[in-house]
Length: 182
Image 1 (cartoon, rainbow, N blue to C red):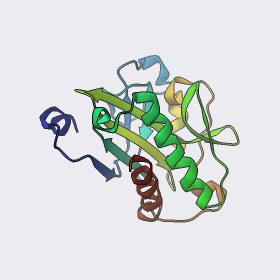
Image 2 (cartoon, rainbow, N blue to C red):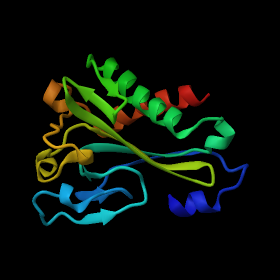
Image 3 (cartoon, rainbow, N blue to C red):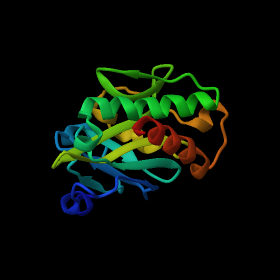
Image 4 (cartoon, rainbow, N blue to C red):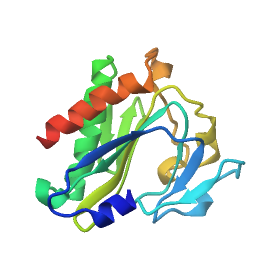
């Protein structure tokens, strides 16, 4: 992502990368290690995105948003809102009522976090992106203060009786992001 962003130019097309990570904690630029409550065998990787610590693992959809914000005429907060809206719209298609919190980026269902946003902007272009918990082991979240918030409970689609693959979840997420950018 960094190399793509560093080497892009005004004509480089924006890209959305869909990935699924092996178990890993990522620590953002402002991340404080004290939010890792119980060290585990899961690696902790320092990243250059904003935010604190989070967990990524199998069963979670991650979409990296490599977008030229200057060309799109949008700021970072607008992109965060766009990504939150994409998650909210997608979850609504599965009958789930999700919402965003201005003071804590991401998406929530009944005070539990289901989707996260973490971005970096370089040369007017974004990278990193969003993650949505689908059908994963949520236990690693108990070893951290997710996104720097104590006692923040995490949830996922399977906990709400939605059983779909990551591919099935990624399609409406990508569609919503694309529609909002068009």
